[in-house]
Image (cartoon, rainbow, N blue to C red; front, side, top):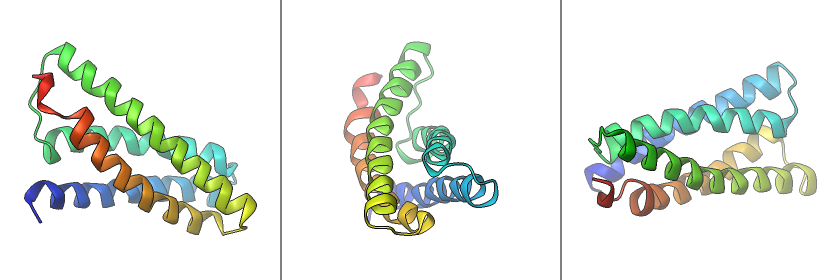
Length: 130
């Protein structure tokens, strides 16, 4: 495995941990509806993922406002698509198949992490933003 993939997996695990922990705290401890908890957990984890992906995984040094803005918009767009995948998976697993919400969150995150890697590598942090 190359360094980029290892770093993506490492920070992906941390991002997933933040997502699942935030979800569990909101849903499990505070009783927030699982759809709202999924949304808030998604937002927190996307902020963390943008910073770590840009700085450590894809080693993007762009500092100009326009470059960062393009990357951020693109990152949120593709993460928004994966949010739809996450939420749809949660609804399917929780409401249709009746899987525990925390277990469902873990399952959906496997697919989300894979989709996010390809979106980040080939669309968000590609070299054309320099």
